[in-house]
Length: 560
Image (cartoon, rainbow, N blue to C red; front, side):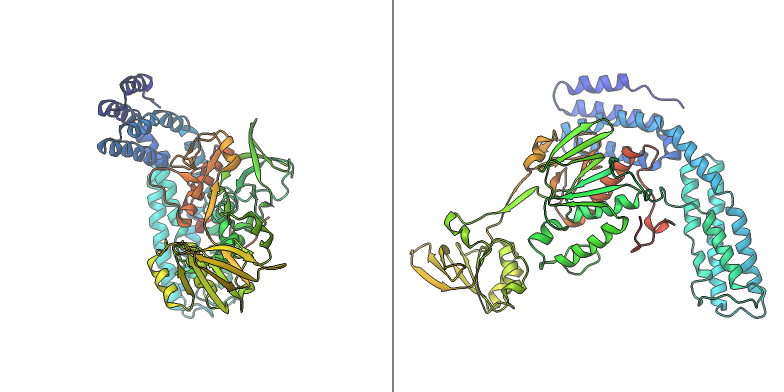
């Protein structure tokens, strides 16, 4: 393969950029990047089109940045392209050999296709169909076979033209054709009567399934050495971390989850278990604890190791990966690391009067442990933010009395939530703050005051709930050598940090256009896992195929 020399192009771009980020420097970098890519583009598109499209997208992104006047961003993006092109071209021969080997494994496709076609033709000619098969089933089978035949023919043509990626894509489409239509509409059981017995048809379908390619790789070996480094250690077991654990298991990786909290679920489980979430795909609304339960069930299917109540304090690079050390002194070796620690270590903002700490656990709360403990109680709630209003709406149906005090007259919450609050039976008292709490062994009363007139009011209460927000801090993560921007970890579009083999995803990361949502965290988790997989297994593809194509995985089933 001819490779375009990129050294001089890079030199030109760097010299141009040395005069400061400007349009000329950006244009030079982009031209060098495009020229380097164009030299390898044709062959790359035939073997690794996904990687080729990603590189072209990076170049297009650099052009867009230049057009917006963001010259430094354009230069940085463009200057990274030649190295990526070289890495891609260096691996083309290996990728092509792998695809050819996989193609050879599909040599039984034609035999399986002929056998299936023969079975369906005989069914179509039969005067009497076997029990459980009707004309609609036979018609569906013919349609399926037509689709399979067309895709397989196109796959062969692509292979002969040297377009390996397109050939494998067409072969996968042939695999996905609904062969099950031949058998799915009938009840189980085998019958000897008829032109073709159901058992024979089942065998033909099985032959096809055995011949077709499957999502690679298979599951990890069940008897892994406990002392061996895990393929991936995930720091943070919130929604993003749990989904990453599932997806890493799906990709055949040996996984460990570490979290400082006592249960899986992160902030959703610890702070907002009864809060509804409305922006998770597939759920018109879902309670936090229910989402956590579903994610937990999904994450544990591949039996990852789970370490709770362990706070990771250090990250040390070693041969073959990293060692994560906890505050308790435990060492966790890993080949790759994924940080999904949300906003980092977080703690509620507490009352300034330290003397009131004695009531914590005895009627004074900074988080909601659940709603039932407040049923039939007289509750005082402090706060004016989104979470405080949400907590009030959750407590209102249960509490005997509920009073919400806020130091101002405006709430920092969604308008609809504030409207519902004022329509509820919760007593809202504005311009008021807490002076003190009284009681022998637990909360018995609270003294509040008007911050304008200083007039005091005593309330007989059973529970005081404080929601002044939370203080987030990356804590020891800041000392791990990562690039930190603000209070977040800077990552690439593939969730790569500046440390090789260390990835990050979820609310803890930042990149242009980042949205701190659970929904985006799920997507970031898959990209991070796929990147980690390629570090652990350089022969693996970044895109593994769709889970529905995998013959090694059935949703909901546990795997060792």
